[in-house]
Length: 129
Image (cartoon, rainbow, N blue to C red; front, side):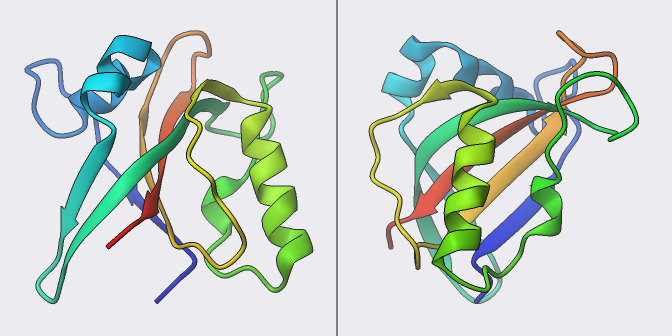
């Protein structure tokens, strides 16, 4: 029921867990994999990839930081727009998927040591069913 659900996973060198999230920085990979599926005990959900962005894991570093993980429910459209504008500034890849206030978002967050030593790579997707 939240506006934003954030899932954290470690990108394992053996290709397990969130390793594929890192491939979304490449346009060809996104074009071949524009949808992701997230299943829980209660529902099977399909999401369309909106963007992938890089941020820093800690606000005290000199690298770009946005606390995307602190957002779960937007109090109004202005806060939603601020969130989207902020992550777009950090985007490595952005699709042409239309995202509007009221959409439900899924963020898959993993470690990313390039270009920041304490970096995070975040895939943002919109619920479509």
